[in-house]
Each structure stands twice: as structure tokens, then as C-alpha cells.
Amino acid sequence: MLKKPGGYLKNLPVFEHFSHSGASGAARYKRMKISITLLMTVISTFFLLIVIVTGRMWLKNVLKEETKSQLSWQLESTKLSMEYFLNVKLSALNFIASEYSYKQLLNEDTLNNCFMNFKKNFGDVMVDLGVIDSFGIMRSYAGPYKLKDYDYSEQDWFYNINVREFYISDVFKGYRKIPHFALAVKKTFPGRNNFWVLRATIDMEKLVQLLSYVSLTENDDVFIINTKGVLQTPSRSHGKELTLYTGKIPFNQHGVILQTDEEPPSSNGILGYTYIKNSPWILIAHVKSKEDTRISKSFLNELLIVFVLCLMIIVAVTLRMAHVMVNWIKDADQKRDIAFLEIEQSSKLASIGRLSAGVAHEINNPMSIISQNAGLMKDMLEMSFDSVDKEQLQTFSGNIRMKEKFITLTNGIMDAVNRCRTITHRLLGFARHLDVSNEPADLNDTVDEVVSFLEKEILFRDIHLVRNFDETLPHILTDKGQLQQVLLNIINNAVDAVSRGGAIELSTGFRDKETVYVSIKDNGPGIPSGQKQHIFEPFFTTKERGKGTGLGLFISYGIMEKIGGKIHVESEEGKWTEFFIELPVKTVDYT
Image (cartoon, rainbow, N blue to C red; front, top):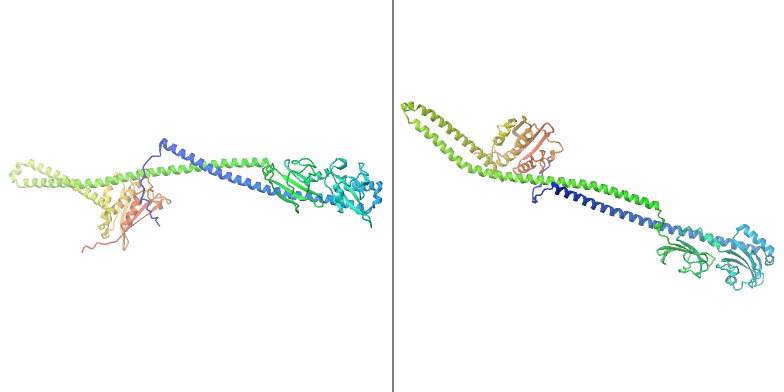
């Protein structure tokens, strides 16, 4: 199936012609290439930065959540470790107080044995061990200090042990002036309201040691405070032990609580805290380091390398794309300029055609006068010599030869005039038809008339022209002038296609009972299979640049549709091409 040409030339806008060649055109395309490269590079880099920034934010959020999760797990683990440590020590004290009576523990040897066994089984964490009566007086003591008979009745821990079975004190310095805390269990005498207390002390350093399980950076902080806000362990941000904590004391809640630390200088950091069961202590951790600090330098370097590589690839790709795009635009501009030049040339040729039609019309008048005068001269010569008798004719025998010479010259003038008249009549007939105007036409004569316009070119190039006409074809009704234009375009293309000494075959005949055809076949190079479907499109040509407008077959296709016919082509590349023009049979009734 042939592809029907679209209305490519309908409503064609008029462009101002300008040339893209030369130095100015090269500079224009260079600027265009630079602009496209910069624009595409900036856009691509912008989106690449968006991806990197988004990825970095996502990574920061992941690290933040991981930090929270890890901090929560570490605080919970440290809390359980402290609670286990305290419970074990309280259980050991309770076991000693249950296994030994008050009187037995008043014996310092027995108390020393218990103290040594305690340290042997639980490690060197207990500083001393003492028995205190209900009045707060140290009645028996085992340890490195001389604290026997010291009065503890004014100590807070002693007041609290009165109302509880066991007690864990805040960190305090006491008589030793060293920060420590006390563990105490209370035992009542059977049948009496009095009680006695078995008390052990542990240095604050044990708490600091337990806090080391929380893995933090040098900017982070972990410490313990009591419910009154007094530091029980040293803090990097809030000072030494037993100083007042400057932050907000957390509410008593179960489990580990994580929240945003809004206090400077650790704003937007993470604050985690948890209460240690059965003690007055609150475990607090401040994570002040940003998530960025957890991203290793090697990762940042790799990210920078990836960014640079991506940027280089973007620049390379955009340069290549800009080069291809600008070349496309340049080719399109060149083709457009050539098309406009060819349209301009076609317009000039059309104007010359209209001018030649007018000139032909004007030449017909003087040619008619020349023909009439030449005929009159011939008649006068013949009449003048016919009236002379034989004697005079013999006398004027020399004039007879002159007469014959004049008649021969006159006949030559009349033949030349008739030939000019035939040419001008054909030219006028070919240029006269603009709208469809059907008239009776002999298809064979119509083809011959078109061939007569090209016979000089055919003879000059030694082209072998073969006519295979069906003499039984009837006269048909068609627009002869426009049909001649189609035939002229195709036969002219055939003449251009064949080489010197080539062959063109013109055939006419019946396609079927209702259709006649004209075939124009040449032994030229043929049409490539990939181009065959495009030959009826506007501005498409197989000729060399500058030798064709690419409009002849497009216009011919439109004319055939206008006059009710068809045109199609068959070809074998490298061997031949054959165009078929088909017309409906509209017989002429001469009755």
C-alpha cells in the first residue's frame, strides 16, 4: 500500500529566509551547544544533589533511630546491671543478718570473717561492714577505718532505715570524706520493738564502673542523680559528684524514656533516663553528638568520589547529547534553507511558465501575419508566371529558376511558422488548465505531445525510446493539461534516471474494462526499498542535492487524486523503475 501524502504544504507559513552558514552560523551553533550543555548539566546536577541530600537526610534519620535504639538498649542493660548488683549485695547482707545473731556479730572476729567471706565471694567492692544499734551507734565494725562507736543517728540513711526493712542511701562523704553509698538491712529483736542494722558501704567508683557499659562518644554524657537533683557520679557537662544537677529532673516513670534534649548546648540531642528500682537514683544519658559525626570519613570520601564521577558522566553525556541535538538542528536548518530555495526556484519557474504562456500567446499574432504574407507572396509568384506565354517563358528562363527558388524559400518560411504555431499551441494548452476541466482526450496522442517537449533531450542523450501503445483505446474524458503535467514530471524523472544510451519504455492499455493506464518504465538504478514508501512525500527526492525540489511526485500524486486517477510505482533496486498512471474510462459520446 502506498502511503498517502499528507497536507504538508497546506497553510505553509512564510518564513523569512536566512542562512546559517558561515562564521556567524558556526558561532550560533557553538553558543547553542554551550547553552544546552550548561542547562542540562545544571538540571542534572540539581537533581543529583537532591538525591544526595535526600539520601544523607535519610541516613541521618536512620542513624538517629539507631542511636535511640542503641541508647535505650544500653540504658536498660545498665539499669538491670545496677539493680542486679544492688539486689545481690542486699541479699548477701540479709543472709548474714539472718544467719548470725546480733550478739554474734558484735564479736569483731565473727564480723571480720563475714566481711572477708563477703569480699571473697563478691569481689573487692565492699569497703566496710558494721553493726549499728537502734540508737544509731556503731557497735561493731570491720574495715580499714576506725568507725566503732560513731553516731549515725543524724544521718538520712539511718532515719529511712527506721521505716523500711532495707535501704540504699544517696552518695555522701560521711566521716571518711570520700564519696560512697550505704546498703543497710534492718533486723528486729524477737519479742521486742528494738532493732539493729547491718550496714555495708561501697565507693562511688563502683557506680562509675557500672556506667562504663554505656558506649558514648567524647561529647556525650552519662551520670546518676538522686531524686533531689544531686549528682551521684561525675558529669562531663554538669560538674562533679554531689553538686546540683542544672537540668530538669525527670518524672518518675517506668522503663527507659527517650526525648529530645532542648537545653543548650545540646539542643536537638537525645536525652534518655530511667529510674533504678529500690534506690533513690536516676540514670541519665545525654547524646549530644550529631548523626553526621557517626558517618565515617571514608564513607563521606566515597560519597564525594561518587558525586564527582556522576558529575563527570553527566557532563560527558550532556556534551554528547548537545552535540547530537545541535547537529540535528543544523541539518534541519540546512534542509529547510534548501527547501525554501527550491520552493523559491519552483516559484520562479512557475512565473517563467506563466510568462512563457503569455509570450506564446503574443507570438501567435505576428506568426499569423508572417504566415499570411508568405502565402500571399507564394500565390502572387505563381500567378505572375502562369500568365506568361511560352515564348516569354523561354525568354525568361533564368527567371523561372528564380521563381522556383522564391517558392522554396516561401515554403520554408511557412513550415517554420507552422512549427512555431504548433509549439505555442502545445505550450498554451499545457499551461491553460488550472482547475479540473474535463475534455475528450486521446491517451496515446497526449503521451506523444508530452514526449515532443523532451525529444531534443532524449536524442542528445541517445536514449532509446520504445512506444507500446494500444491503438484500440477509446477517447476518455479527463483534464488533459493536468494529465500532461503528471506525464511530463514522470517522463522527465525517467530521462534523468537513465544513463547515456539507456532505455525508456512507454506503454498504454486497459487495466480492466473500466480503467486504462499509462506505464513509464526505465532501466535506471531503481529505488532503494527503504525509500520507496517516501517518494510521494513533499521535499523527498532521490536525486543529488540541487537537482530536484522533491515536489514533482508529490504534486503529481495530488493531481491524480484531483482528476480521479491513481499513481503507483514498482521498482527493483539496481535494475528498473516503472510508474503506473491509471485513469477511469469515461467514453465520449459523439452522437
